Length: 327
Image 1 (cartoon, rainbow, N blue to C red):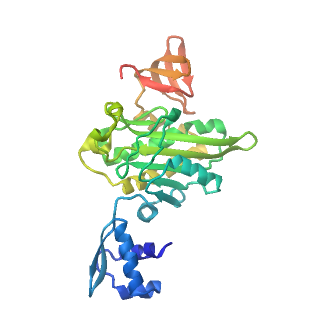
Image 2: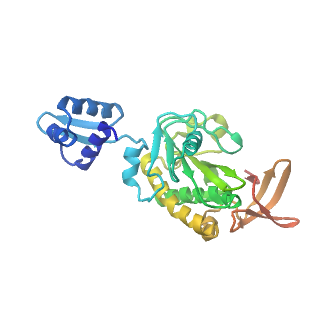
Image 3: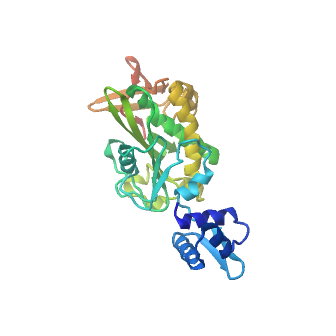
């Protein structure tokens, strides 16, 4: 941990009163001049720190930047997010996570960014990722499950995100659209992308599970093509949300669901999926390459497959792009 981060921890532990320079010097065994330089560095990062010549320093406010220093104190997890890497700007958090996984990072490592230059969703669609307003993160997961069982993992991530939004603002009634979108008022607020690396002889090597959540972006800032199909928490409520707190709550929620899923599969989570299911009972079409399946969505199976009532009978759909007819 850097000296600046150690000073930040000391200031946070004494946030109600000033901490003298001499006390910081004694704990960290550095000079007063070094303390001043590190405090300046923290200010440059967005921390509001008051200085009083006789009393010392006091932390007034922290930036809403979901890095390790801000997120880790809010976690209740045993493993998920306990190692967290943050960048102000990156090409893609899923790409960062894949590189970390190949380098041997542990299960539950999180990669987060303030902006993505090449963020993407399923089918290589570009994910609009402006700086400083939304939440972009990816987890490296190493579950000991069969490759076929991993298909339901995007729903597990989706359940965690929907549950947290539901707790924060229940009036929004977030819905989970199979297999990987969170909707509010039929507009996308979150997209999920899970990418698996596996081997025939040993199954899943790792999965990068990424999520992009529109938190504080303005509706007018969205590209014109997205303004009718996407939204943000701020657009829906008129108020801003802490990205730091949102990430911590999602990681806490996800670990509980992830542990269940690893041990028992998706079936124990089916009832929660049913609660948030955006498609059930609605007429939908599912595009699978050149094939289109049309019918009524009949819920999600215990293995994560979408059930569709077609003219030919009930069909289990394991992949594809689902659309609600009429939207």
